[in-house]
Image 1 (tube, rainbow, N blue to C red):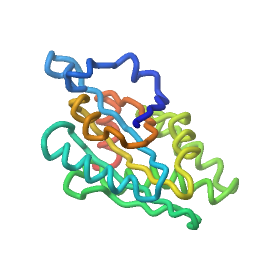
Image 2 (cartoon, rainbow, N blue to C red):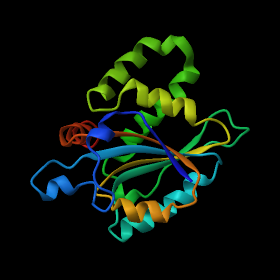
Image 3 (cartoon, helix red, strand yellow):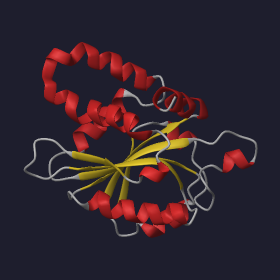
Length: 191
């Protein structure tokens, strides 16, 4: 069963009917919202399975995946393993995922010696719609023995996505990014 935890209240303001694409506003001359979501699973392999399903949905044009990364954290490991889901759809690339995942999972391991620098790093993410509450929620949720699929997406046919993941137990953490936020991310990490 899919249960959702919405960290950013923009999700309610930008709700689109379930039979429409989430980017339908662009079809009417509006601005498409990209969504940065974290799909957290209670097993270390759940994100890999979900990644294959997500790739199939992307290939069928039922969701536009701009970029995605997988985090797998074995129960007995001190830190998680991270990788890009598919290099061919990497709009932001390894620099973004390295920055975000490092901030979430590896900076806390370094302790207070790096605390001041962390504040500056999180401030730069806040400027593009990724706030402290989102980062903290992901950090609290993705722990040893779990996995997560980090996805930057838009234009989802939500009924089809829900069907594809029916019966899948996951926690969903998400934040919406405006077109300006997404553009700023691309400029910062892609050039």
